[in-house]
Image (cartoon, rainbow, N blue to C red; front, top):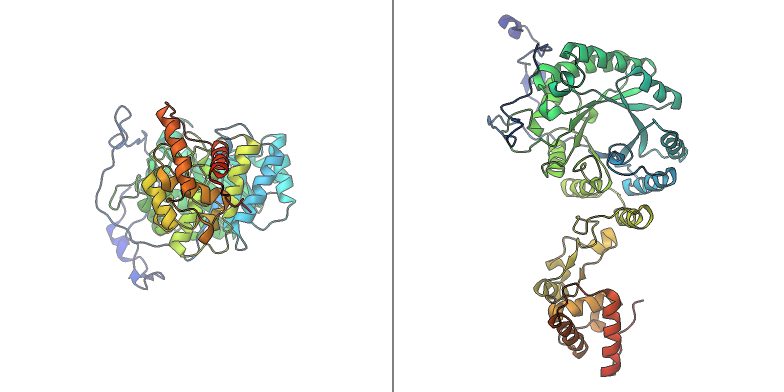
Length: 473
């Protein structure tokens, strides 16, 4: 629809509170109710690899004063694994509360409501009485699902409002106008009951941002103002197509999407949330980018567990927050290690060993030259004080490449030897163990040595040399 050119000159001039400059809105964003779906075949040719075009339109950094993390471990995180028991959910929820710290930086956690087990878990978590994470739900845009929200008395619920033509035309078999009217009817039902809706704009990185998303958001903000109840917008990068490259074309540009929602759609930063998937290894960088360009909230799941390649890992965004803000703001990061151990020992979930922050090998070195650096000063090869923040001191695994330094570092860590008590790589005991290690691999061994084997060998060397390693306290 073409607008009257003269209308531009009659629009009010307003003050931009962020940069203190006068501004005038250049366009009116009206629903483009197309007859045929726009699936951006130029960017997403299904029989080729997706393309990342650029137009060099740059948007400014606009990180909100307050940013935070939300959790979808019990919703999206349960779509790719066996369901958690109610006891497991309660334990994890307690740990999320501890991790978020006194400021509640893990702001919310969302739950399914469909099964008896789901509702039991919700009740038990609500009974904890925590301010954070706030217990919220997720439903499809249907009146039937909304009844579940009303029965439990939730204060906020997520509502699936798919926004790409892939979903509107090809899945829902609707037009854009029909979809918008359907979504708005369910959202009004929420608001009529005093429930705050969180609108999950599914597949936003393949959506017509200015032909559907922005006009829809303008309608949402009208409802927010009319009812006096927050209406949140979650930008869902459902297929992981988002990119953070400056000047990339929407709908793939993360910063372009956030700018459109905030500036053109009128959605305040505190009501914008980013939900990313990791199909192209970009979940973390895209989530951080969303923060940097005006999105206050980033949605995550523990260890990135989620559909297909998973969601943005919650633990990753904890450390992204600290790097951006210069502080953890009271978050208890040792809960991350406790959660990882709980998943391994109690839930039976195997975390890939090279996973940052939580994998068994994330701060383990096997190279002798690296172990030599750790032996002299652990800062050389450790990302930060992992013992302080994660109860995980750096470790040297002993193999055929560890050398004397790797063995000395393992002995010091295993037995808690520090200062004058610490073993040097020149120690006769270290040389004795090294000779045995060399024999093992010369005989055809290919696996790393276990802690139990090394303890036995250290004890044998002590007896042979007549010396004793101080036991770990």
